Length: 284
Image (cartoon, rainbow, N blue to C red; front, top):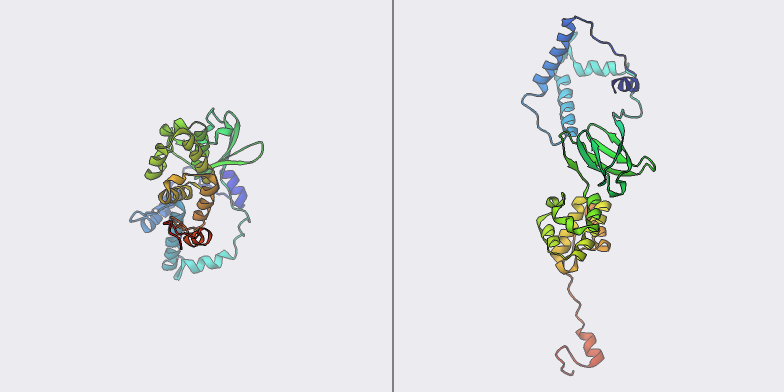
């Protein structure tokens, strides 16, 4: 991976000399300088992307406020701007540090990667799956067609099952009795879970299939929001793919506000015109 990185960015590598403690010490001093100036107090971030942005902002601020050792009156940022003109341009394509592995899914469609199991889907059971393993994601594709099967955040623990609800729900729709013991049941909001628990086998099968279709089209969270809105408005209406999926898509795009119950139109005028009577049966 390091050799590929060096070749991609056309770098010249210079290693420290053996038994030269002073060279190693200068690197340690530079690391200590950055730790003291950038990471004290310890930083907090919601994601690695946000952490990288915060570190870059602090580095830029440090370069503006610090002077170059060889030019005491000139900030480091100005010296770097002058040196930037001599640098080679970056490649048009960013370096992608990825490890490709071919694995065989088990009978449930799960693929073992670094002691964790990722769901490729029931259609991939006992089939070869191509895995692209990056530092933050694991992407599963079909080696025969190149079709994207699933993509997950990479797990660094051990013995975890990582599943996409859109892939699990169709499998549950085939065997709805497994719903109560399924791994994704705790992830479903309480009101929706209680409604599904109360349904008969036929309704549960249809509802799980509809939710699976909505998850595949719009994602798990929008599908759950759509389920909640439909059930709050009319629990007897049930969950059907022809209504659930469009609502989930519009919720994903921020274009939907569920109108709630629809008032029935007043048809008494037609009754009087056709029959000559009103709702009470009195002649007019």
